[in-house]
Image (cartoon, rainbow, N blue to C red; front, side, top):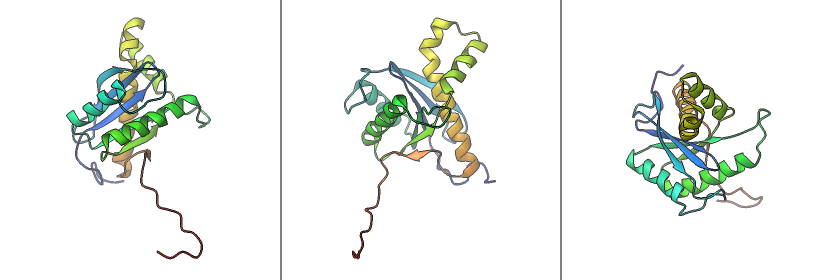
Length: 177
């Protein structure tokens, strides 16, 4: 098992939980050990994210403000691992955000049941139902980011899949480069 911090760069990471109404944001310490809630950003609209949306711009400003070295966006898959409309919205949001914050890498990480876990955690800590709505997205972002940080520490590599990564052109038969 790699030593803590092995293979990881120093700097804050941001975790993002994309909802249809709000975007929860969490931030880590510069050593990538602990995720903490940062902000709940209201969504501009329920439509898929687009360049220039206020919420995308706010998350991008948080990336710059915290000098984030990486952003992880939760990818809501079903228990079977399938991807539905919510996962498609998260992929679109992550792609738009990746263009906006480049060259900071954006990665998608599996977030099955994080919102359920966040509600449970808030309820157990005594946060009332109405108050939960305001912070559940931040709590889910914390869970997403903490899981990514733990995976990064244990493997020495960033968690999840790269968004908008450069793809090599496929080689075609008879072509030399």
